[in-house]
Image (tube, rainbow, N blue to C red; front, side, top):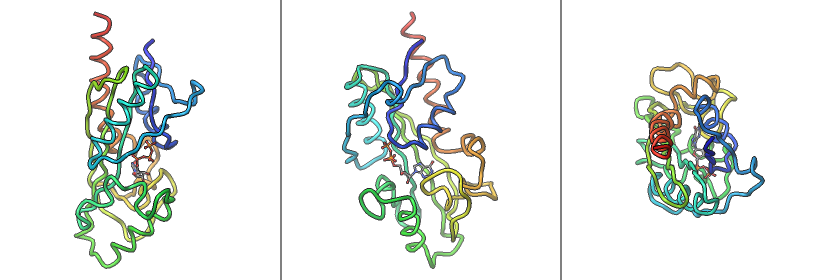
Length: 203
Ligand code: ITT
């Protein structure tokens, strides 16, 4: 069975990706499963797509393997798309989720409900042996709450309520989030790419 390495050091992303890919005819492994550390890749692109491609190409060259990388974050309409590619380090370098959420709530303090639109974005790139196979994107639109709600998930999940839901991502079960999230949507597209790529290899 072909092996796919998930190139992320974010443990929440790892679990979400592993769960969503369950049932595919591919062995999904994490770098720690094979006793390796991920090489550092500087995420200095101006788009999620650039960063996802850079991570997956670099890491798949390093491991000489099939690698999936994700770059993701939150775009807030009222803040002209911020925090965007800086989502993980919005408050400062190596910020905690708590610090990032506090900064976002402070910036959005007097912004009324109808102007609190935001979208989670996830770019995913698949590479083999240092060559890009494909990059895809998934989006999930919603609104920002005025305070944190819920304990599940990670990052900005307690502040984000997807369109059509009464719950924030952090109030949902992981299974419910994984049905509608930006990451789930990107992975649905990537599953088709992976299936076609594996089929090609057998021909
Ligand atoms: P890797 O680069 O190792 O994958 P990372 O945590 O640095 O891990 P990113 O650069 O993609 O990942 O930054 C993602 C940040 O965006 C993450 O730290 C969260 O703050 C936010 N984010 C992304 N997806 C999210 C989700 O599903 N729920 C909540 N916050 C999310």
